[in-house]
Length: 355
Image 1 (tube, rainbow, N blue to C red):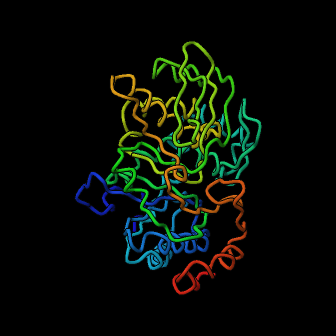
Image 2 (cartoon, rainbow, N blue to C red):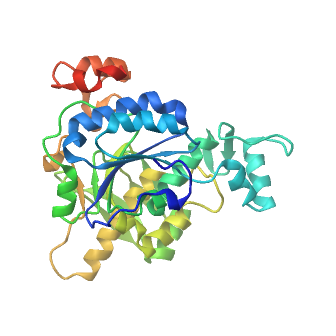
């Protein structure tokens, strides 16, 4: 497993244009308990058959024996634990004095005190204080993740939040749908949060894509989402839920989208304003807009909603399956396990040891 930020350690693979990886992120090795359950549910529902690799991003390093314990749950599939970035001290050392002073002010930490991932920090124009680790995960998932060395050999990323659980066997492989239909994005939940009249975002979109957005909408059957573009206006749009999506990494790595994501991530480090849900949504709908603008054929839809396309993955998060408000599931992970195990054949044998 990879547990340094050192590219040499990443196993060399023969690049496969359709290779896919299952990804999540945690703060530190103390999350190993929830991850064992997470890996086990995904393996039993899908991956023991699909045999995709796992990459677990972590902010704080793990010991070798901890990595080995988690790899044992994923076996026979490969699992890598990858450090997202250098430690906080190194990141601070690479910043200018002004940047560090600004960050310390945001976090209320004096010069002579050590800044940690656990400090709660405020920022201009954002209403809530968030701990630095949480702000970093928003920045990482918006921007750094797409070009991270641990993902460089993969084309598709299946993201599932580490606190999400899967409640049934998958009848279909959503990665196959991505490949066969040349999609940029498969998503579970829309709409899930919105931005209204955001002048700064309108400017950033215009700088890169030469247009702002007056909305992101689903079609009448909720089968896909699309951008309604407009010139010289503040940006307004709804976005998808971030707990699960599948993305074509090549699209997000594309120069034009990287340029936007860099601007989007903000004017200073560790900003909570850069939201991963927004980043994933905007790049997908802008890619679709750009491809359709160039083409005279019928409109291509590169964004699919899973359930409306007969993919029911039963991912339980925030007490609902796949964001369907009328389908409730248990929030507590042990209650969840006991609620689903009788109807989820073989779950007890595969995953009972982790509950």
